[in-house]
Length: 154
Image 1 (cartoon, rainbow, N blue to C red):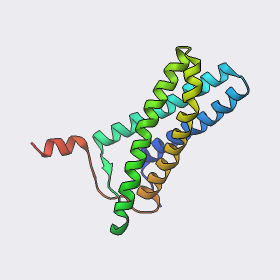
Image 2: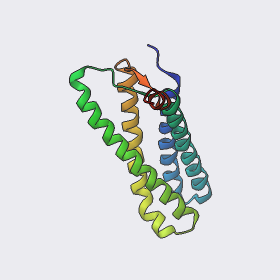
Image 3: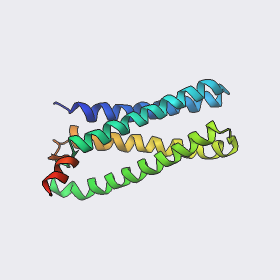
Image 4: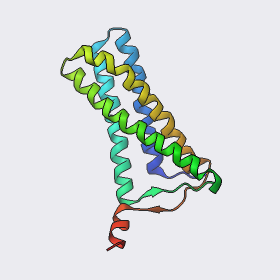
């Protein structure tokens, strides 16, 4: 079995970000504020690295279509939409959580951070599931880069 390198690397960064968030959560429970802050910065950098790889791949190489059985396509699509909604809301919550922490609005930070963390854990889990469905359980379908799609339509 051979898996494409960029999706494998980018998915690894999402998993790493979730692991770092779990570690950061443990650190703050132990009142290790500086270690928590550094770990959460690393988690944010890991998530941002995923996003940069994902966007670059989407623009230059393309998104991979679901290559599994046709009767599963609708379920995959619904699952993918759920993942995208989670990831988008998780990113927004993440930015708000980071800003509230860095701007010393700790009451707000303490309220939103657990919600953000739980959303992000689900983002990581569903992201791995999407990766497995696209590249491990089934052979990925065709890809079309955003650039080619735009240029071929003009």
